[in-house]
Length: 253
Image (cartoon, rainbow, N blue to C red; front, side, top):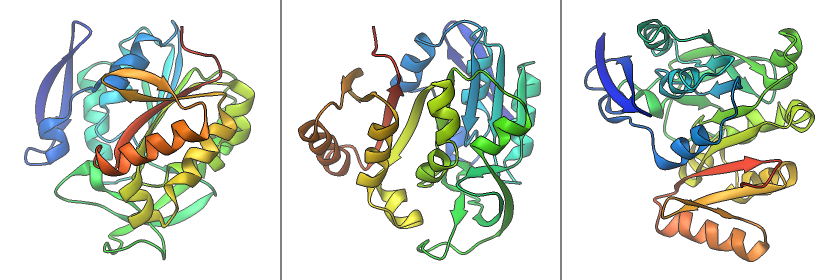
């Protein structure tokens, strides 16, 4: 286990991982994440879904949050998440499970070169054979079982299976109205999940009154079909298929 340090908001963050893993070697908070942290309310309850080695979870915990719940299904990465939490003395409740559309178990591919490229596997997944199985719950079931009645912010980054997390948590999201930072990766949606990226964008716009993309570091509202088309064009043509979307029940500012 190796430790590298990053700075965020004037605070030192220790990240634990395996040297040579591309995510561990290079991960830093990007502008959409920094924006989400700037507008995070005091005493927030945060869900970090696809926590990896814990950068989001620990940074959020150091923002004066009330509680962070972290979810990382990869059995090879979860110990590093626990190490990162311990190294930062962070108030994070970590769970070695996936969150999806259904409860049960599902095949999983653990990428030895980059923890950020590990993902769930279905019959539709191209190119990667399972390396094992992981337990899976739903967002709604977890919240119900743990009697959680307040959630302020969710981050979802699960390599193409983001739509499943939302489907398994829609009741809770619409009831508790948290904000959301979600990775929009057209490649992983097509390659690993076999869904049209438009399906995720449509679902987000159905759930959240305000869906923002980021351009030149600034949030821009996707408030029309034309804006949606422009975003999809930019995602596929100029963004390398990877963007972050910030979604909320209240407009920014």
